[in-house]
Length: 304
Ligand code: DON
Image 1 (cartoon, helix red, strand yellow):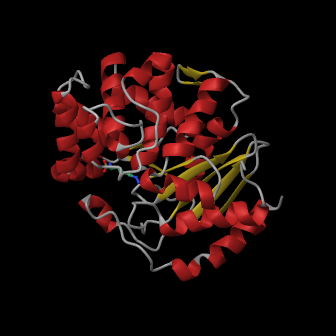
Image 2 (cartoon, rainbow, N blue to C red):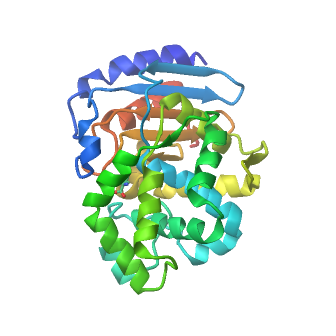
């Protein structure tokens, strides 16, 4: 498959959508990003890399980082993790409080904010140096020792993170987190502030596409069955109340973030990362979704 030509065609085909959607300005530091950035990078498991656009420019991963924290938590806790967080799609917004209250503080899945805040608590209580350990893991996964947190973004989100603070307090009230609320939120925001470019992100996700290979990075190891199950959770929960739409249009497991990135995998074939900061009303990148829809449509390759 000539993925380079396919990506170049797609990058032209999505241009008419360029002005649609808006930046995630509820995190003020993200409102300063150039909304016209666009990048896509595909890594095949046979070792080729194809990219178009600003694929070397780093952006805020936001919720995409939840895949990395889930991988760490599953490695540490095994199946016992699912006592702390569910694995069912929520059908609600990523920051919704309604379902969490109705379900007595047990988050539906690890990718909604409530679930990821519980993951942050699991890492804080299990690791010697959670911030460093998380960073070492993602650096090894993406093959770059310079990937890091953006402290301005983390601070900006903390200063305006009223909804996440409400979620964390509700979790604490229901005894679903052990650590201090402020400590959990600070670590959660830090993980969300992680930055990578599309080349690094596609490389990091290759490990999830290649589940027949041994998954062991910086002491975090997963069985191929665990990797497949992370992909299953991405398929059903990776796009919040648009998970069905992404499955319908794209047909790959993936994860979005309000920084405008989406990472997806085609098991045993490739990983792909796309970045375009303008978001639709569900918090998912407009051009990113379209790029991946065209990728699986034009190549006639998807998991279905
Ligand atoms: O907690 C938040 O609201 C953000 N740090 C992450 C949300 C996010 O990326 C949702 N994804 N589309």
